[in-house]
Image 1: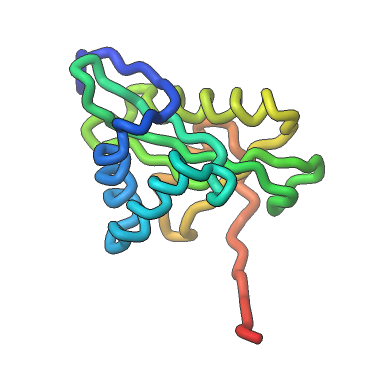
Image 2: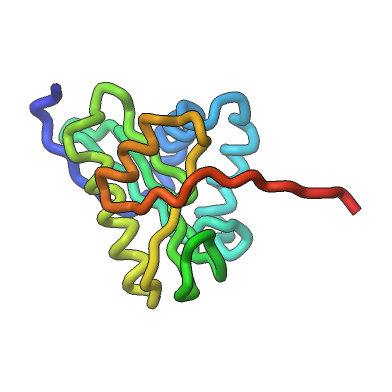
Length: 153
């Protein structure tokens, strides 16, 4: 448990390296792709699917979590477009179960609500029980597992 306070704020350009490290912890093996997406976010936000990124910052200035949110015209189980969509959500393991994830999600919800969204959606891998439980604890309805398909044309 940490005794240090955490604040949530919008990501800033100087957060690039710390955000990259957190993103790489959530989605390993794609550091260069992450770096490019982070650059697009700050330099040409309209060219990226992510519309808002908030970070959790500990008192000493370290970033300990992030949430990436977009606006989608459709999301499984939602009926009122547009839909705020939690594209990525991560809290460093030592900071979990201390309200950091909740604070990030609340900031993401507020951003979506301010843009006219009435629903907030997310997804996770079917086998990610930690994420499923975290989503449920924050009031998300579990819509079950879906199997997605695609075909190259």
